[in-house]
Length: 152
Ligand code: ZN
Image 1 (cartoon, protein in one colour):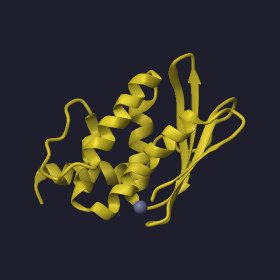
Image 2 (cartoon, helix red, strand yellow):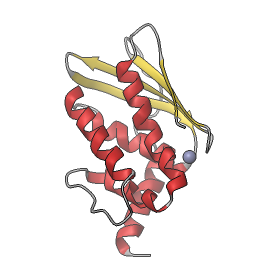
Image 3 (cartoon, helix red, strand yellow):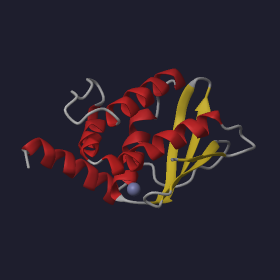
């Protein structure tokens, strides 16, 4: 295993062990549930948008290390962004994670690059994208009705 892969492994293990922004969100918010039946990952994403900005993004749930690390990294990466900017990053991340393993990792995605190794294991791609699909569902949800997404 290369040093770079070791480093990536370390980021994933760290975010699995100590997930960032883990827990529910008080006050007005939108939320959505995500389920990946292939692996059994279940996440709930909580989102507060003020004006056009993602003020808070948190999650709860249980699942494999990849799904949890991806959710943790996502909350770090998207908090504070405008919704348009966040959606661009969702597209960039989704394109990266579903690309061929030898495709160069896009610039400017920071620690999210740690998840690029998942491309070698197609069955785990849905674990990595679950939080991101669930974020989109939360963004689309109203404050009265929760969104829901199941990966197929
Ligand atoms: Zn999983």
